[in-house]
Amino acid sequence: MADTILSIENLSKKYQGKVALNSTNLKIKNGEFVALVGQSGGGKSTLLRLIAGLEPMTSGTISQNNQLIHGINSNTRVMFQDDRLLPWKTVRENITFKKPKNSETAEVVNQLLERVELQGFADAYPASLSGGQRQRVALARALFVNPEILLLDEPLGALDALTRSKMQKLILDLWQERKMTVILVTHDVHEATKMANRIYVVKNNKIEATFENPLAYPRTDATCTNLSTTILNKIIDQD
Amino acid sequence: MQTLEENPHNIKINLAKILTNLLHYLLPWTIPTLIIISWQLASINGLIESTILPSPWQVVQTTITSLQSGVLEQNMAISLYRALSGFVIGGSIGFLLALCTSLSQTLNLLLDSSVQMLRNIPHLALIPLVILWFGVGESSKISLVTIGVLFPIYINTYHGIRSVDSNLIEMGHSYQLNSWQLFWHIIIPGALPTILMGVRYALGVMWTTLIVSETLASSAGIGYMSTNAQSFMDMSTILMCIMIYALLGKLSDLMAKSLETSLLNWQIKGGMING
Ligand SMILES: Nc1ncnc2c1ncn2[C@@H]1O[C@H](COP(=O)(O)OP(=O)(O)OP(=O)(O)O)[C@@H](O)[C@H]1O
Ligand SMILES: [Mg+2]
Image 1 (tube, rainbow over the protein chains, first blue to last red):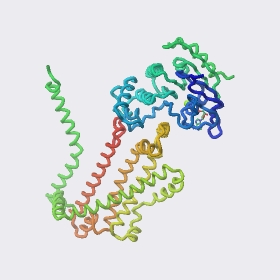
Image 2: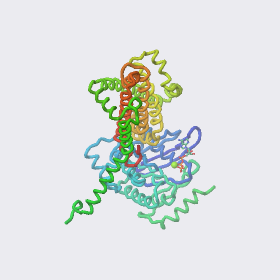
Image 3: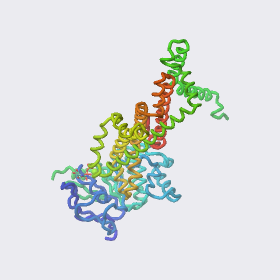
Image 4: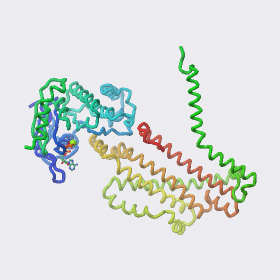
């Protein structure tokens, strides 16, 4: 099991006695792109926040590269639906936040900005960017530290359809270029089947079903439809 | 080859633009200017008696004489000293108090409701008390300004800090900022727009408090000059003092505004500043 990057065992989380995540087990291999889909309130964000170390777990373990996670997991970066950029810092300052300013980091930022097609925006403040541009800055910021695992919690939820599909492609390309591991939470089953190698249906505060998705990239809407339908049925299934 | 500037059509456009800009600057001044001119004319023609309202020119002359004798500078310096000391003391106390109550739940429980209770006392109502305690010396004026300034700074700092986006704070935690870094990089900048609104408001309170307290009990300062002139029926000095207060008020407001524009320039591009 050398290439398991993330191993979650019996993970549970309660908020004031109310179960948010119930005894969950999960193994993710290095370089995989997995998606979590499922009903609202099912526990998807909770699972992601636990992996990022933003929330203490109630019981169970999370280990990344065989290291138990305690507190903030600095080998991961999270991107949320809201960009969480600091409005008083420029695009460049947001991306390099907390890192020394030198020519080396400046060069990395320039490359990243070029990659997300925002060259020329380095000195702009977030207030002057569109929602899609801000999300791309947030993506660049997340990638700046080269995280082993990129955690995405509905990152495209607030974008229009066209921007959204462009961002999906960008994220997929970056994932393949950087050979990182990505965990994507999404409401959009179709987005999950288009992007992920494996899709977990999170329901009733645990992982209810797993779907492998071996389709080759780039995937078209047509090739994904069957799997999407199956997953959707699983989500709404009343069992 | 024809450059943009050489094109006669463009020159015409530029000229029109300059004229529009000029109009933009001049237009707000037309009504005040007209009032002053007609006031001056009415005074010259004896329509307004100078014992009731001196002419603008008389006020200007009084100002020049008071400046030449140095009386005006002296009193202005005293007034400014009182205003600024009160502002700095009250502002610092208000700010520090707000830091305590907004950042610590325990101190919040301990202090906030008491501060909120005290805030409801109109500080000008304290004048008789303050005079009995401190006399008519500097400390009475400074302490009144201090009390007046303290609350707006307190309230705005408190609200500013409390309403910093919790997602940004969580973002800070995920970057493993320590408390000081969190405070300096996220909480203070996040609260700054609200804090500066408080500063601007407090500056207004500072002048009103100073005017009232100097007029009621003082042996120096602009307010004293005005009260003193009253006993000599010296109308033009009274008007001069009013003008000076107005100018100082405007000046401090401009300073606060330019502080806002320079510290909050990150908002401008989003079109959020409009004051
Ligand atoms: N900070 C919190 N305090 C209390 N309860 C919480 C908190 N965060 C989440 N919960 C609860 O935990 C459960 C799981 O929430 P979670 O946010 O993980 O769901 P989700 O699958 O991400 O839903 P959505 O698709 O709507 O984002 C919900 O019942 C929610 O109310
Ligand atoms: Mg969620």
